[in-house]
Image (cartoon, rainbow, N blue to C red; front, side, top):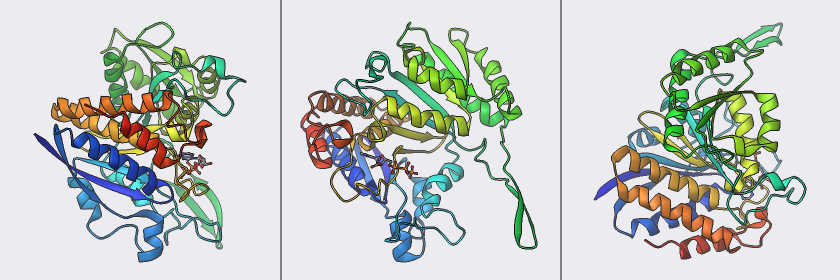
Length: 376
Ligand code: ATP
């Protein structure tokens, strides 16, 4: 039986609540006896910073580095005056857990499945909804996670104590573009194609008509695509793509984008699947991976047993699927499938509809409904 070291970083706000439910789900699938999880929970981020003056206990990074996988909750703690907790250097407390780990563990692929389950309503339902159905919304987005407009290398010019100029570069490297694009094509080979026509398609979303670095990203995309002649190449400028995604989501199978356009379109894509509470993600590199719901700490609902735990639970399922693939562990893959089915079934029945989905279920009710359907 395979055994995995898992580091859990619950973080701030709703992070500990939804992560707690994901841990209950993981404990359930572990009880099926197909694999073992050794879980280490590390308190961290803004709330920890307020109490201890640092973002996590000494040695935490090394524990993350040696773990088989990391599960993150959310970061961002708000002070009574409404201001977020910041480190001495001005970065949000929790930076080390999100950006720090992405960079130091080279988690270059931000992978976000976008799938609408039966029974999920949007808060604009009935107005634009007809095009967003479980039959039309089913794609996977790959956002480059380590360079682009978010790479370090900012230049500031200060004269007489005043900031006069700030230059923030957009960096695209051949290696950085190639590896994320290749991952996108490799996944497209294993999927069943776009909902509209069943064609395997990878769409490159960028702003290459204006930004030279994005033009390079697209050039690399074309080069990599030659290794995958079975897959249709598709292109979109990020501005026009937002309209296409909302109006014709069924066209998209796998989408790949540099960091900034990827950040924007994945938040929009999350809305198509029911919002923040439904969107799971993985930050995946060649040797390490961290999984997290895409939502933040949601201070408006924190501590109220109101957060939707589905995104965190499905992130835990993504983690098991990744472990299963990496270690050839069918037990972990089967457990991931079971979790996804249980989430779908609990939502479809109405029992796991939290307030963000138009229901009345609490965080714990929703997780209980998922657990009740989790059998092997
Ligand atoms: P960040 O900048 O840290 O990513 P954010 O400012 O984008 O965070 P979130 O914390 O993700 O914001 O919250 C955005 C909105 O979505 C809030 O109204 C919040 O209540 C809601 N929300 C976020 N996560 C959930 C969840 N799991 N269940 C229900 N509602 C959620």
